[in-house]
Amino acid sequence: MAESEDTYLIKTDRLNLRPIRKSDLEFIYMGLSDPKVNMFYGIKLESITEAHEQLQWYQNLLDENSGIWWKLTHNETGLSIGACGYNNWDHSENTAEIGLWLLPEYWGKGLMKEAAEAGIKHGFEKMGLERIIAEVETENASSISLLKNLGFTKYPDKTFSDVKGDKLISVEVYELTRN
Image (cartoon, rainbow, N blue to C red):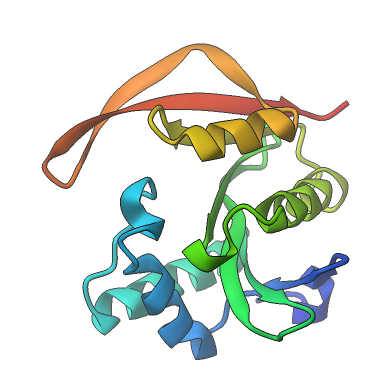
């Protein structure tokens, strides 16, 4: 990481966001192996080895300046609750793809909206993004609702099919542009 980790720290009313690091191995494995989390999430970890690979992916984003992912920690309890971040950062187009996941026991409390708002602010103000992209499975009503609540709009004619496990899924693309 070229810059100090402090450069990437974000605090909100209820959350601390800090870059994911190697010491987060067990948390990342726990979250991304949870069937409820990966019901609509593109990554499903089956082993600690895969969690190591995922951590390396997060580190590569920072090393290659192609994105950043934060671990979300609840201020009051100190517990880790999820992650959000950017990947596919295109510096020439000033775009990046946002992703997010939250442990099920924290769903419906407005925490992901709070984290996403902070991440979006960071993307526009610190990363210089002009457009943020989000890909979401069409059956993921909660994430679609969150994106719309955050001001994202469905990108016209950008629905595509993908294979997840042994199932064909439909994915929509949403975007948020800098005002």
